Length: 308
Image (cartoon, rainbow, N blue to C red; front, side, top):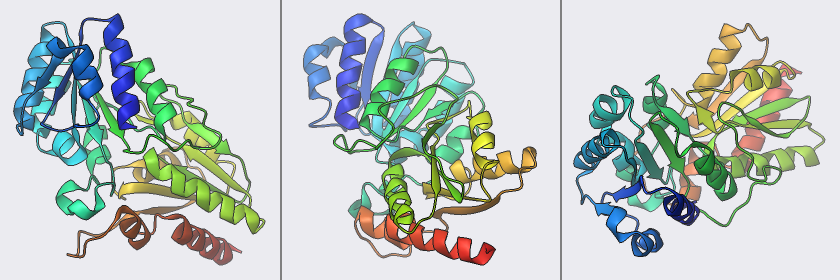
């Protein structure tokens, strides 16, 4: 989604001189087209993400719309106080653009794994969070939200080539996208991990299991009504996220079930433990934490057998 973001931002900057791009010394081989097109609206803050977000707050106060680009952990965690005290508490249109959620920087180790960012962002009522499932949805989401008056956190995957079947770039603030409808169970997911969820749903369909798939692309506002309607139609829901199980889409799903008294069993699939010292690829970590297609199929089959 990185190159899609950069190209879409160029299109927006061509239309509006308020659009600026800041980076924390990252984005090489991705951001150059924007830099070449609008060199006077690009700022490399260096490896100083707190300063970058402080700059962005000042630029937003001056009437600009700054987009701050970095890897998830450096965009969301290192400058979090600056995001909170600047963009959020002062209601400024700062855009925090994070890349590589979950384990997309697998071999780089836990310092580069973004597995708590949605939790900390949705804890702030004033911060909209957008987590597209593929590049086409990222483009639509950026076009739909770029000039909103609130601060926004974008959680982008790295892959620009994959298109999620049935999504077709659809996006609306505060709404979920239902890709499949089935009466046996519901998968609820957010972000690029939806690719594994759809693969699991396809494998389950081959076994005769009817599966619904719901993609949640926004938090604050949450797609509460869409979630409630989908949950009420199945006996079992499985949330899937490349994120800690606390604070993300699994927590949101549990909150909707509890607050609306929906009689649906929920199983949360996500990261449940800290790094154990072993390193590997994105695929390795997704299998290890049970959020790849194969372990998701096993989780679903076991849950359905237990219920029957």
